[in-house]
Image 1 (tube, one colour):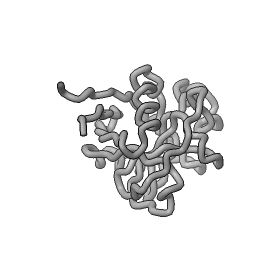
Image 2 (image 1 turned 135 degrees about the vertical axis):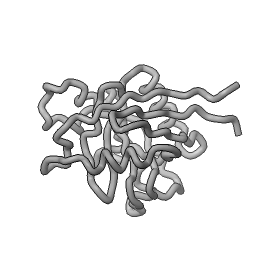
Image 3 (image 1 turned 90 degrees about the horizontal axis):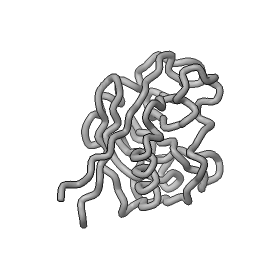
Length: 166
C-alpha cells in the first residue's frame, strides 16, 4: 500500500500527529485533507471537550472569537459526506467525524477519542489515529469548560498536511 499523507494538528499545548486511513474511509480522508489544505481548520477551536470521552473541533463557526458560543458546533464547510462506517474500534486515539442525527451529515467537524468509546463503533466514520501527541489531547480535554463542554479559553488549531516522502 502506498504511504498516505498525515495531518499534524498544531495547538498551544503541542501537536497531534494523525495517521489517516484511506483504506477504511476514503471519502472522509479526502475531505479532511482537502479542508486542511484549504485552511478551513486553521483558527478553529476545540469547542467540545468531555473528560473520559473525547475532544471535538473543526467548526468554521468557531474562527471568530466574537461569534456567539451558542453557534459553536453548528457549522460546517457547506457540504456533507456520505457515512463510511467501518470495523475500526473507537479506542483511545481514534479520530472520527462528528455528525448530527443524520448518518450522512458529516462535514468538517471531527473528534479524537481520549478514552475507549466502543458504543460509537459502526455509527461514526473513523478515519485515522493519533500516532504522536496523545498527551496534548489529554491537556485539551482537561481544560476548564462551561456547562455545554465548551472550554472557557480558546484552544485554536492549525492543521498541516504532511505529504508522504517520494
